[in-house]
Image (cartoon, rainbow, N blue to C red; front, side):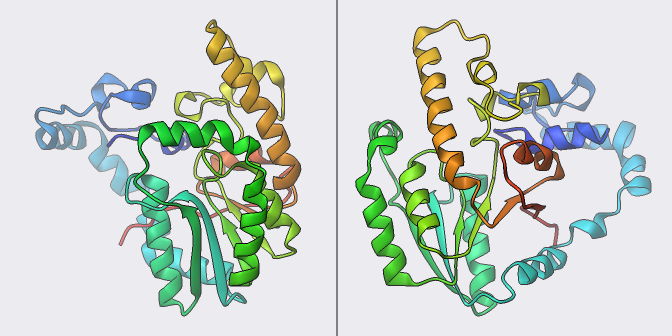
Length: 277
């Protein structure tokens, strides 16, 4: 499938597990030719790979019971054990990508557990020009802080659970959330809060070990990209002055844990995105 950020692939390869898929976009560096699916004949190419390379290996070395959906539900119950109402913060809610689909699934599961779930997000769909404008002015939109404060006072949640907040939300919402005194959880769906360009991160070497300016700038030659990366560096540094105060950081894979620790996140736990039925 089209895996935009490569987190799953990175973690798999780190554990010496081969990755099979379409060699396109940012999965190209992770998939060798002999494990690449043919887009014109997908099923036949997949069966050929299973027969020749993977089939026997999977059944002898991988314990699929570790990834069952009921196990995920049990872990979710532990996370929200003493919580009745939850305010979920996200850039927007729409079935357009991994994080958005996960949050829709999370809402259903929380509701099934008898929890009261409320959301704060931007309305979707947003035209491209508006998404670009939001990304540019969000760091300067100080009035967002007062708006978020009113939302929290109205909802009065037991906990505030933040998800993707690096595109349109930015630090003003986060500042209001952490000053509210409510317990907080932050789920990092990707590397967006610790790298300059998460969709182009293909190696752990590219991930900054804390706020190192040269890691964010990299070897870019474009003046516009240089300015964009410098601004993101400054904004994320401002961001993490707040995010370091979050009570619990959750990541979808163990691969991310040491990197979050480099950014002052003291409590980091692995809470996988998906399980098999």
